[in-house]
Structures are given as structure tokens and as C-alpha cells.
Image (cartoon, rainbow, N blue to C red; front, side):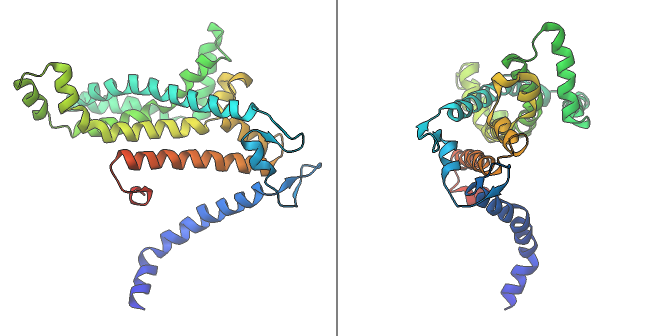
Length: 275
């Protein structure tokens, strides 16, 4: 009894919080995904798996495969991956540049990196519309990539910077003393020490980029609609909550897959230990 009371006093509030704001809403959304949208944009029975079939491109009404959703999903994956790659190419050297500065300049650069968060994200996206409109780049895929990199670059730089701050530079000097060339010395002595921050930065960039809909909607237009736009449209204009719920679970599954990959890359035994 004492152990159970101790459990309630320590983990109990956290468990209740997760149940109330994560498990219960997810269960309700899963229930919605098994319902049907009526002609009056209402939701009702009978229970069906048609929405899950539509998620993977099968239209039960016409009994045929419609690859539109698969195209949107593929577009979301490669655009999120390419945006993440751009953040890696730009943010990894930037994290080293900031970390190698003296204390005063380092704090100033970190402040400049964080200052955009002081302004509402939607306002910043509209600012990009004003900037890119004279060049006739809105809407376009290029504008979408610019907006995503701008939005997620700080999320990549900060964890990498945290890892670079802890680098033991003596390993780099030891590799150079043993005759390793600069590139080989960096890959052997420095890069492995920054790998945890690099993986965390990639996840913090790729996962929200997958579900992004504001940037692609305002800067990209209909031609660059991502899965986040599709979900937002189902819960908004289309009023098809069951289908939107099924799409949301697909996106949630992709996020969990990314976290599982992080757990494997970090050398942990499973997702439970990561959380």
C-alpha cells in the first residue's frame, strides 16, 4: 500500500496528465477515424475502415486505387527531407562557428538566432511573402523551402551547438599528432562527439517539417500541398473529420517511426528508454 501511495504521489500526476491530454484525445480521434461523414458534413455510423483505405490510396466507393494521397505523402517526405538536408548543410558549420567565438560574441550570436522566436510565426511567414513577391517567387516550391529552412534552422543549430560545446578538442590534436589529415582527424575525433546533437537536430527539423501546413499553404500554394495541408483541410473546409483523423494517425505513426530510429541510432534498447 505504501508503494502504491508513493507511486500516486510521484508518477500519478504525470500519468493523469498524459492520459487526459494525450491518450484520451488519441482514442477519441481513432474512434472518429472509424466513423463515416454524412452528406450534411456530420459524423455518424456505421463503423468502417474506408477512411484508412483512403489514406493509402484506395477509394472504396469506386473500388479503385487513387494515388493522390500517396503523392501528397511522398511530396511531404521528400520536401521535409530536403529541408532538413539544407538545415544540416547550413546549420552544422554555423553551430561550430558560434561555439568557437569568445563568450561575448557567442552570446550575441545565440541571441540573434533566438530573436525571431519573439515574433509570431504567422507574421514572419507573411514577411517572407512581402520579401519574395518582388522576385515573383510566391507561390513556388523554392519559397516553401526558404520558409521551412528559416523556420527550422534554429531548432537544428541549438542541439548541435550544445554538443559542440562539449567537444574534447584534445582528440583532434591527438589525431593530427598521429599523422591524420585534417578531414580524417575531424571525422575520427570531433564528428562522433557531435553525433547526438546532430541526430536530435535532424529529428527536431524533419518531424515538424512533415506536419507543416502554414508555410506550404502561404508560400507554396496548391502545387506544394503537404500532408499537413491535407489534414487541415479535412478538419476545416471539407468537414471530413473521420478521414482527417485517419490521416493524423498516419502522420503520428511516421513521427513515432522517427523516434524509434532515434532510439536505435542513440544505441538505446527501445523507445521507452528514450522517453
